[in-house]
Length: 148
Image (cartoon, rainbow, N blue to C red; front, top):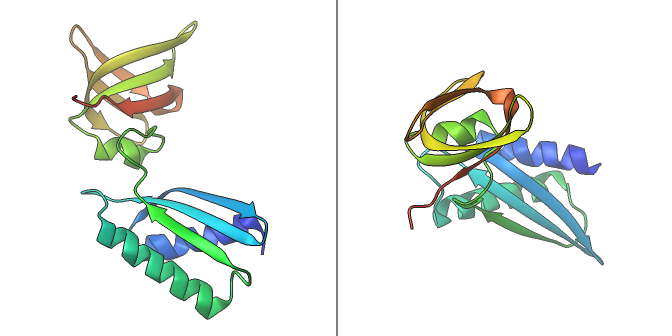
């Protein structure tokens, strides 16, 4: 099984468990494979969520003999300070203050504002002096501005 096939199987198990896959990293160390899985869902992730996904994945790996060698599985939330990349990531941050880096007319620009709305095509941010309506495909990165 290729790495991409394994990632697809992992994503399928996670999504069937009711969670969203934020990232999957696979590292090979000697004879050990390390699987780092980052999950999210509306309302956030708890330790119990991580345990559930870990059990579901381990059961799936064992039942289908997907990883015939020794492995370590690490399931966690991606953290609040992570880069937002998908529409779902942005939807979860509605009403929070964000810093968005985007492709401007002539150069890369940055805007800080409260996320008002999100669609498949655009985001709307309310700034101190002006609002910004930005096409989703012009966004380079987005981050939540932490209140402390």
